[in-house]
Structures are given as C-alpha cells and as structure tokens.
Length: 466
Image (tube, helix red, strand yellow):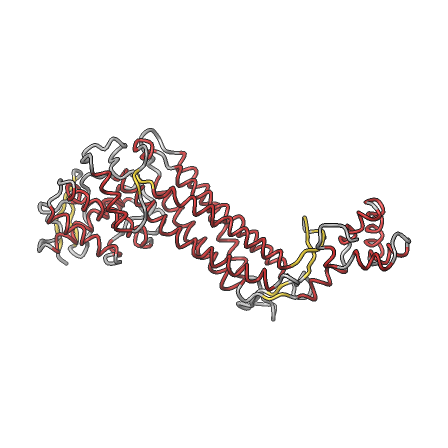
C-alpha cells in the first residue's frame, strides 16, 4: 500500500494513501479509545461539520481572503461529505481531549484531501491547499466545534419532534376511541374515583404536546452561533466581515435561520444552551417513562392483574413459562428514558467544568446530547408504532373495577358527610359488601338516590347529582 509522509510540529508519520485524513487525525486515533464510537457513527455531526466548512470557505471567498479556486474546491469537497461520501474517513472517537480539536482537524484534513484530488493533486500536497491555512481559515476549533454541535442538534431535534408528533397523534386517537370507557382512577396505587380510559390517554397526549413546545423553544437556542469568534471570542485572524457572511452562507446551505451570537466572548466559553436543551429532553424522558410504566400496570395480568388494556403481543416472554408475554416495548422505552436522564447529568457536569475563555469538555457534551436525542427519538417512535397504535381496551374489566371499588364511596360525601362515608368504606373493606348495599342497609339514602349517585357517568361529573 502506497504511503505519504506528513508532518506536524511534533514530528513526521507515514500515512497510508487510502486515508483522506492526515497526521493530526492519525494521532487522535492513537490517543483516544474511550467510547468505542467514532464520528462516522454520527453522520449528522459529520454533515454539520461539512456544512460549517462549506459556509466558511464561501464566506472567506466573498470577503476576499481566500482564492476563489481553492474556496470552490473546498465547497465542492464539503458537498460530497454532506451527501454522505467519505463517512468512513471520520475516525476519531467521539469522547476526546482537546475541546474537539481532533474532530475539527479530521474534518479539515478529509475535506482538504478531497479538494486536492479534485484539482489534480495528490493527498498530502498541502502546499496547494492546506488544512489549517485554507480549510480552517478564519476559524478555530473553539467556534467550529460548538457551532457544528448546534447545527447537528438542530437537525436531530427536528427529527425528534417529528417522532413526538407521531406519538401524540396516536395517543389522541386512542383518547377519542376510549372516551366512553369508564375505569377506576388511582392515586398512590390505591382506588380513587372513576375516570375514563379516554381521559387517561388524553392526559398522556397532553404530556407530549407540552414537551413538543418545550423542545421546540429549546431548539431555537441552537441557532445562535459563535462562528467568527475564533480562539476565545475576539475574532483574531478573522476578517471583520466574515462573521456576518458565514451565518448567511450557512443559512443558504441548511435552510435554517442561523444567526451570530450576541456576545462572542460569552458564547465561546458558555455551554448553557446545551444544558437547556438537555433539560427539555430530560423532562420529556421523565414523562415518557411515566406513560410507559402506566401502560405496563394497566396491561398487567392477563388474569391476576388490572387487565384494563391489551398491549400488542410482540414476543414470547419466558424461556420456562409457556404462554407468558411481557410488555417489552413499554420496558425498553423506560430504559431509554433512564439513559436520557443520566446523560443530562453528564451534560450538566461537563458544562460546569468550563474554565475562563473555553469549555474543554464540549466533546462529552456532544456525545451525551446526541445519544439522548437519538435514543429518545427511537423511544417515541417505538412506543407509538409498536404499542399505542395496536393497543386495545378491556371495557368490561374497567367497569368491573369501578363497580367493585370501595373508592366510589367518595361520591357519598356531599350527601351523608365524610364520617359516615368513611364508616361505610371500613365495613366494605372488612366484609366485602358493596358500598351501595351498606349505605342502603343503614338507611342513609334511598335505593333510587344511591343508584343515581353511583351511576358511573354521574361520578364523572364534578357537580353534585340533583
């Protein structure tokens, strides 16, 4: 295999000509073996970096500091990466030291060598196009890396929101389908007062709707970029008009209204926007986990549990117990939610760790944030398509639990008072008698009054039955 000799200020290395990356990327592959997951497994991040590099090349061309021939070659090379080519050349571990410098240089080197070949040169002939002098012109890792995280996060949040809308729609369909199915409400896992299965699913849909609004608002914080800040926000080595042009070019490339940050010094050292997004993801995960667990409980049985709903049967549930089927979809969704919650702690700690003019722990933020969005998107789609869509109800079991519950004694409170109602509940628990029968035996109310009060539909009305 042919090789080329590359150098940096540390020394020289032989690089195989099959690689489009260069010496700095090679050093990173030797230094970082943390997550076992490389950039190529996050294609939307690679794409975001290429979009940033294309915008930078075109901006530098427009402000007159980059040869148009070189700028166009870099832009076309970036287009090929954006289209998904050369993904296998992005080989640096996602978790890395150096605030993302290795990721930035992996991108610089790959795009540079693609551009060199397009102009008839060989890989590594950096006297024609240089990874630092041309591809990274007017840039620093400290503005390209966080900006690329934001571009990628915006794109992935858009995918997540689509999955969330899918789940919301399926929940709303079930809410309408089950609107007349009366069931027992429960507080602290104990009988409370009647509700409907439709109310339950409508509440679930409301959770997701609220989280869609929160995540949409948080996504907006990803549009404020520090491109042009270079090393610490002062814009050293950057044309004064570049910062205005580069966001305009990026908007043309992505179709997203990216804009420059209000304060480049603050934006280069502060990663609170990522904490904000992660917080919204965590809230969604907490609610989604609650939904998944409620579904497990309502599905419990089939004969010795609540049995109010039937989750779709996805696979055999036991290697020893014939006929057993487990609520595997609800369970895996819960596990996914716990990962999002744990990632939020990682993001918070990495963000807090920023010192002075830069946060060196941004790779940890990127890794945790992308994983959270990815797994939460899959959890939303999985629950919608494999659980909610084909879920059915057991109306008879729901009604039976209402009629046999001691909790419905609450409906007597406005008529006979709390003390008498509590006494009825106590006797019902001790004897197994129905609360209506005990009330009638004691002469508190007539049979007609009791039947009217305990009519399930009447118990759903918050006003007293006349």
